[in-house]
Image (cartoon, rainbow over all chains, first blue to last red; front, top):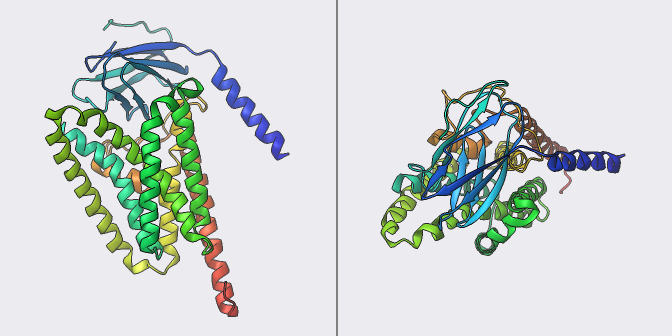
Length: 117
Length: 249
């Protein structure tokens, strides 16, 4: 019974991980996020791909999103966010918090991007 | 750079300092065990720092999260075992080493990355001293506060609450790698105590405080705390029963 339950949990987790997700790429250059405003749809899990073009490592940090991820210099990292309710979720680079700042803007269904960064 | 180093130091050194307070208050730890803990923590930290880049690339970029989840769960299981007197020192070592090493590795990475820039060294040094000073002060305060409960079940209970709080970090990590879905926060107490504030860091390290917890986090925290408290209480009742019967355990 326990084995069956564990297998079911693993299958659910695997299917969830393997399911196709919308992807957003954010680049980090000169300790700045490009784009600084990331638009994502509401109520959908989104894969955030962060590419660090700097030589120094950076830590992607967000209290609103509850995420922390170190991205080494000249490398990339993936993390998932959502499903999120419409709203604005700030994030920053923990190692350069004064310059590396941005926000995830979750759009309501039907809402259009107001401006492009 | 100075303020940032203090914040990072608080985030990483505070849980270590609090953990050491609990270890010293809740258990009669011998100096040999402390030296052994220092050695195992240094070795594990060095391994984590040196291999982090390679580990991070595993499992489609989720390697370090899986490793952290494994280490936190091991620490939690070992803490459950530490309630028993038998093999207690080994349990404490297996509990404390992963928690210390994970936090220390995070801060070491920052030091290694920015210590190479000579102009930043004074700010990093002063920030580290300030951050560690605050952490050690709070840890000493905790030891003083816990002193009256040295022999009571309460101190073990608080110790397990602290470990359960540390292990609850498993949920945001599972959400980060997409294995568990995000849910809307059940409440928002940011106006009262924000996660980024000093109290936010302290309460998070002490009992897993989150200003905007989702359902998965609350469920994980509740399960880990309840199991831990049940084991502490069961052990206490068993000991009382045996003491009443005059049987040594």
